[in-house]
Every structure is written in C-alpha cells, then in structure tokens.
Image (cartoon, rainbow, N blue to C red; front, side, top):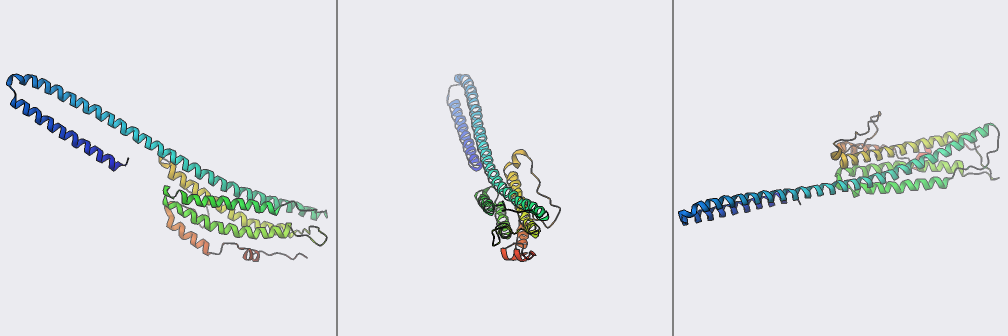
Length: 303
C-alpha cells in the first residue's frame, strides 16, 4: 500500500472516531437533561464506564492497526530486499560469465606466444619445428564466448534500468569497447592465421624469429582492449552494488582511480562527462579494424 493511501485511511479513521465521539456526547447530554435527577448518579457512573470502554476499545484498535501496519511494512521491506538480492545475483552471475570468458580468451593467447618463444629457441639451435599446436579454431571459439557473454551483459543494463536509469551509460560503454575489442581481435586473428596456419610447398611450418615480436605486438593490442573491458565490467558491478546494497549496509564502494587521467571510469555521478569522454575515445580512431591494424604493424618479409 502506498504512503498516500495509508494517510487517507488514517484520516478517514480519525474522522469516524471524532463523529462517533460527538454523537455519543450528544446522546449522553440529551439523556442527562431529560432524565430524572435521581438517575444522574447512575448515568454518571455508566458514562464513566462507557467512556472507559470506548477509550480501551480505541487503544486496542490502535494497537492492532499499528501492528498490522508494521507487519505490512516489514513484509514490504523483506520483499524489497529479496528483489534487490535477486537482481544483484543476476548482475553478479552475468558479469562473472563475461569476465571469465575474457580471461579464458587472454589465457589462450598466452599459449600461442609461449609456443612461438619455444620455437625461437628451437630455431636458434637449428632443430626441427614440427607442426604448431596452437589452434586458431579454439581461439575463435573463445572469442565467440566473449561476444555472447558481453551481449548478455549489455542486455542486463536495459533489463534493470529501473534500479537507476543512469546505468544505461554502461550499455554505451560496452558497445564502444566491443568495437575496439572486435577490431583488435581481427588483427590478432589475422596474425595467428599467418603464423600458425601457413605452410610451405612441402607442408612444413616455415617458422621465422620475427613471428614472435609481431605476435606479441598484436597480443598487446588485444590485451589492452580486454583489460579495458574488464575495467568497465568492474565499474558496472560497483555501480549496481552501491545502488542495490548501499542503503542496506550504509556503505558505498569507491570507484576506480587509475593513475592515467586519460583512462575512462564509468562513474554514474558523472554521466555527462563520461558520455562525452566515450564519444572522444570513439572518434579518436582507437578501433583496430583488420586493414588499419595490419598497416600499423611492420611485418618483415617471409623470405
């Protein structure tokens, strides 16, 4: 029941009690005036008894009403807390899925650089390289898992916008960063095909030492975008935790404070500033599409 409706009920009860009291006093006065004086002592005693009974009834009624209102308020608060808990668990589960997928993608890229470094040592020792074990298909599957998880997280910002309409800023932040991540991954994937899936006429893997440095350069691009996305996910969790649980625990988690002032922090208290910063970042040409990404790298000749 809304607070306005509760106030209306209280006013209605007060008016009813007042009118009843006026009627009772009027009736008692009429009986007192029209009755024989011999009955006055009995009427006085009865009046006192009646008033006591009315007051007692009112007190009991008031206590029951207050008890009912307190119970209703308690139930309402319990339902609110349960809903907030359910929402936060939804946020926690979905953001964890996205963070885990990003972590899995990054860890698998490290396998590639590790293998290339091993083959650099083999090359220095004039050994046989054999076939590369790094799987481009497995890499692509891990990126697909990231894309699906980020889509769910972006949808979540729309789903629970009622918690705080300002959280829609995260939808924009995730969209912008997804462009950067997609471009960096396209550049990285092109390098992986070039260094792990290309073989000479005899079917041998023509490993060369420059593979390592070029792969690491592409990996640095991708790692930067993965790290930025993880940071935005962290900002989202902090914002939702403060919005849903801050009042309950009387505490608020602080926002990130990166050393580099150019790094964007998604702070709900600075939505206009954050939105402007995201626009600047988007227009700065940070996105790595395949061609631009490849052009930014110095790839030595295969020969």
